[in-house]
Amino acid sequence: MDKQVKFSKIYGLSDKKTGEIIYIGKSDDPKKRLKQHIYDSKRRNTKLHQWIRKNPNSVELIILACAISNDWQSLEKQMIAQYKESGKLLNIAKGGNQPFRDENDSFKRKAWIIKNFMARLVNEWKNIPTTEKIEERKAMLRYAAWKKPELFGEWKYL
Image 1: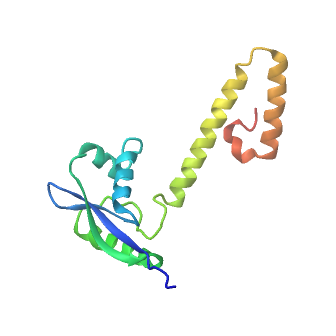
Image 2: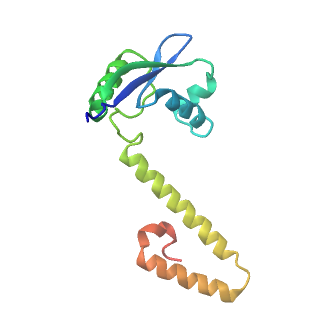
Image 3: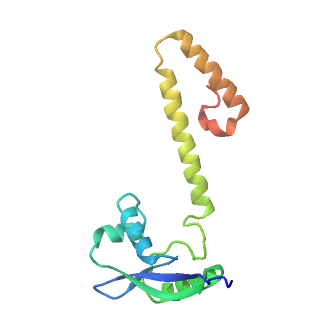
């Protein structure tokens, strides 16, 4: 039996009013992906999702190209580069399965989460009413800070 060739589509989201393509992506099911973008616009805050929220009736899906599934990355990168030169494309990544954030943003986000988690944890433990529990929690914190000081930042010397 012959294997069925699967095609991935490179799609564009365009503004119906201007006809300008504002985003390029890849999907095996572009209509389903458009619905996902619209759903994501209710909870995410990228430039694309902000644009979709402001213009919900102006979003139009256009199939720009088809590629064999294992070779879609280079086509998507090429199309994003081409459209970025000529318009106001809202893509953050260069395409081809890249993460939408660079490593520095990801590292900063993790550091922010850890810092805020530790601040909340320390505040919760400070508000425990009995002194017996406080000493127990402080001992646990000291041990954790001794084992992983990089997670505690400014709180490692409590």
